[in-house]
Amino acid sequence: MRLTISAAAATLFLLGGCATTGTTSDGTEPRGTRAFASLFDGQGAPRGEASVTPTASGVRLAISGMDLPPGAHGFHVHTVGRCDGPDFTTAGGHWNPTNHQHGRDNPQGSHMGDLPNLMIGTDGRGTLEIDIPGASLSGGTNPLLDADGAALVIHAGPDDMKTDPSGNSGGRIACGVFAAS
Image (cartoon, rainbow, N blue to C red; front, side, top):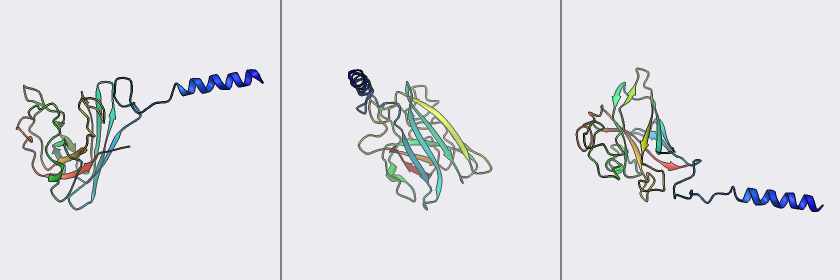
């Protein structure tokens, strides 16, 4: 009997050490957390989804678009977690916590909301994954999910990767609000 109680106590002690409080010792979120956004056009029709997961050096964003016009489309993380149609201006400007200029080809470095163009095929679909170094979901110095949230916006045309502040990528044709999941 004594051995059974001691084994049970040791097991509880070890399992208790495995519990988490929602952040790691360095203040970042644990690996199991993520953010998700369903993308819709200005009339409310579904146009895809996006997810953000932590990596060792930042976050990884994955997007899957559907029923979109074929060709290259600029898409960016925007500063506010609102997507009021039809033009999605409530999503604010590009997410730029480090105050850099726009453009992945900018010699001064691009801001965190800058992403490569999303290529949509003749079937209306396209996918892309990209790492965003230095970003975090909700902890750290550059959180995506801050007090007013964040949105992902797909634009009508390609991003020219240099024009400040928006890449000359045209109107906003789809938007989704990131939510922790």
